[in-house]
Image 1 (cartoon, rainbow, N blue to C red):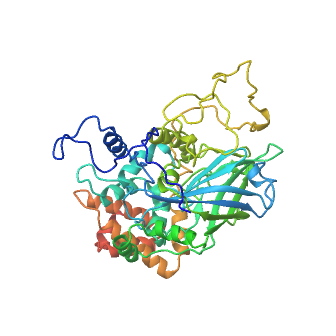
Image 2 (tube, helix red, strand yellow):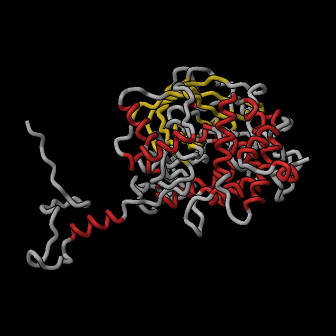
Image 3 (cartoon, rainbow, N blue to C red):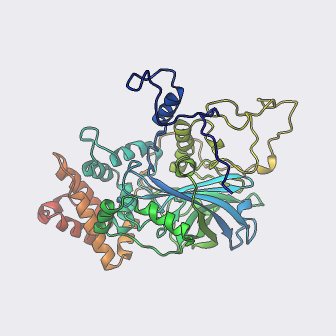
Length: 497
C-alpha cells in the first residue's frame, strides 16, 4: 500500500501548489511582489547560518550513555554516580578550536571534548579538551590568546608570528604548547584520543564534605595520531576526516568507548600541596593522586540531523549538578560567565529549550518571554518569586558547604608571582618521558611552526621562545636551535644562565 503523501506547506501550514516557478506577469515578465512563497523560501535561506562559534566552530557529535562500574559515593552524592550499573544518557561534541566551520579536521590544534549528561538533577556539562592543561591560567588573557589563533587583521591569514609572539611572552603556555607540537596535536580522528575535564572541580558527599576532582576519559580504542605530514595530506584529501570516521563507525555498530577515571584531592590538602591545584597549566602527578575507575562512556547513536543537534548543542561549565561543584580555578570561574553568554548571543536567551539542550526531567523557574520561547512560557502561572499561588520551593537539601577562601583582601594578583612561576618542570618532564621517535616528531613540528615566524621582530620572538625551551630541557632547546639553523654561539648569548 502506497504511504499517504504529505502536502507541501508554508512554515505556517498553508498548502501550496507551485514550488519551482515564481509568479510573473507573462512567461517572460517581472516577478510579482505577491509571490509570498518565493519570499519565505529566500528569507529563510538567507538566515540558515546562525553565527558560528567564536572557538570550537568545527565539530562532530553523537549520543550515548555513561555506565557506572565502580562505587565513588564516598566522594560525591551526585545521582549520576549513585550505584554500580547506573546509566545516564549523554551527548558528546568533539571539535577543533581555532579554525572556522569549514576548516579541516586534521589541523594542528587542541580538540574540544564537551559532554552533556541528562541527569534527574538537571543537565551536567563537562566541557573540556583532549589535553589535561591549557595555554593560560587567567581568563583575562583568553580573548587575546584566541586572536593569535585566528586571522591576522592585516593579511587575513593565519600567522605563526602572532602565535609564537604571544606564547613567548606567556611562558605559562609552554606545557600546552609542548603537547600541541607533539603528534597529540594531530589526533587520528576523535575516537583515538583521550578527553579531560581539564579544570579542577569539586565533589560534595552526603556528609557535606568537599573533595577536589579532575576528570579523565581514556579511549578504549587506543591512542592514535597523525604525523604532521599525514595530517597535511589528509587536509587536502578529506578535510572532514574526523566527522566521517566517527559517523561511519557508529553507523556500522562499532561504538567508541572511553573509561571514565578521576583524581581526587581532599579539600585540606589543596592549601598545602606543592603545586597550585587550581592552575590550569599544571597536571596533578598520578603518583600523588592516582586515577580512580568510575565508569564507561559509550557513543552509540548518530544525530538524525547535524544542525538540530550538533550545531545547536550548547555546553557551559556553569551547568553542574548536586554533588558536583566549582573550584577556585580562575579559568573555570571565567568560563562560568562566558560560555552561557556566548550561547545567548548565538542561539538566544532560550537556548536551553532547544531539544539537544533541554533537561528531559524537570525545569521550574520564573524566566519568561524572549525570542524563540517554545515551552508555553509558564502559561498562566506566576512569573515572580516568592508568591502565594504555586508550589515551587528553593530546596535547602541542595545547599553546598561554605568555602573558606583564607583571604580578606580583594586585589589584582599576579598569577605568575613567586611560587606560581614554574612553567618549565612539567613540560620538561613531558619531553623526557617521550620515546625517541616522539621526541624527534616534537622537535620537527616545533621547528616547522617556528620557521613561520617572520617580520622585523623575528629574531627577538625566536630567541625569547628558545629561552623557554632551554629552561624546560637543554637538549630540547639545542635540538630546536639546530633545526632552525641558528648560530649557536650567538643564540647562547640570549639563553638563561
